[in-house]
Picture (cartoon, rainbow, N blue to C red):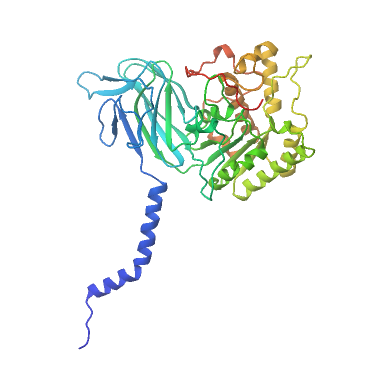
Length: 441
């Protein structure tokens, strides 16, 4: 008997022929779902459709994947005009933190800040005290929405192995820089938040690497320019600070900090490189040449991946000479950076010269106030690191980097010899502090 074919037979054959492609497409979608999780929306105070309601007693746990960090003391505040739909927020009279579990990546975070019953002032830090929003003021029953980009990372390297973290430092007080969640810190005068929205984004990344004058410092009174930088960039670019206290460029290579960056770098990303404080302490006969060669190798690797390397000379120490000028305490190391910049045609930000001008403008006695403590001559406090971050922005502008267009509109330029008046500078402080000096000096 001759077999006849129905339209369904043809359709079945079409499906069978394309099942492998369909399976591949589904696998691709599944992979994208894993690397690009859906947005997370949280509301505080009152239920909102499409948002997860967070109550004051919801402490973060791995089971839920979200909640306030231990120690948070917040209260729900409700309000709204007569006859209008009620609105709510949580507020506190001290710092509080909220976390949500997310995979490694860059995230656009949108916060709605304000208090329906009172005026508020809220500063927002992310992860390990990275400054995102500075002193957002709202009147009673006024709400402002602001966005910023947060980079979340883990120690595992996608190409194999992991970063060799410094224990116990990076596994205890600095653990938030490497964990599996995005943490927001709300502080200021009566900090208040009504909503938090977290969405994965594909944006250029500014990788930062270096030592204790660059890294995300975990506690007061210490700060570094790398953790101030996000405040000055629009929510179209991420800052990923891979610097760490006590590092040299050789130790960062050995600990696979650069391997981690290489595994993440995309075409169009930036790499800011500032070493020297600890490198100069080596007594090896070829130490300076090795430093020079390592800088050149990192520049070449970044370029091979489509990245844009930017070299920075070391932030000056507070080393005043008898003539009232800052002396170079780094021997030939800043010149080595300048040499690599010339040889490789790499943008150079001369932080040694810029910060020397900054300290000299404050004077030998007054410059103490730019540092974390009265005995510090290396590590900055919040004012000093804020001003050094402005030096970096000036360098971005001077080099005419494309990143210039991503600088926030309220940055009006900077002259290191005419810094902001320290008495006019304010930034809320975390009440917890640690007298332990960062590694390196």
